[in-house]
Image (cartoon, rainbow, N blue to C red):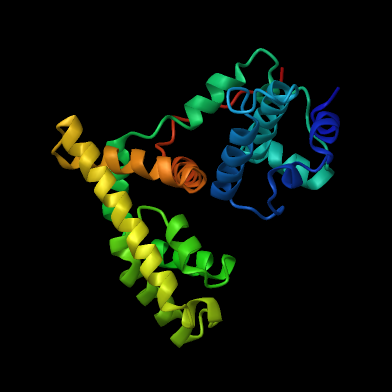
Length: 253
């Protein structure tokens, strides 16, 4: 059974772009990021309850191999077909190794280095505005979703949003512009409790330097906001992990 047939069988669509939830005009970075997110959801180790997880994971690997290869993608875009004989679809490839080669694990030092360049950048501003629109002004959801963000960053994040509203780059949602003082106090109280717990854990473990402190913070965030923490790590790995060296292209078998 060919790749397109397998996609139809496992994902209910033979359109490679639809499987990843992206458009035909998606950039290489968007394809890579979407592949990571979708493959993470069906990874056999993370979805043991899905009897088709392994098959889905392998099919996604082949799908990405096609769309990430300029020649193979061009053939698919023009003809709506996949060259099953192409070397990128080699049946003896270990798709788990291929996936880990593309997405090596993120370390605490990677996060520290990324945080220094991300905070205050135009990229952060764009992400904040996008999340503001996505959550329709719900600052709690926004704060939980912005990467490398803590309660101390709220005034800065709100300032970004306010400037975007003022310039016309964002809609003035009532959830943001008219948020009640009670919600603000509850959010600050919750954040203070999380910070205190993190500090107590840090003292208990005898940790002191910046890297150890961040590790504690990440563990605390994972405990209190599991879903958003996972999303943060997914985005970070998909967008910023070091790319491995490209394998040399080979011709058809």
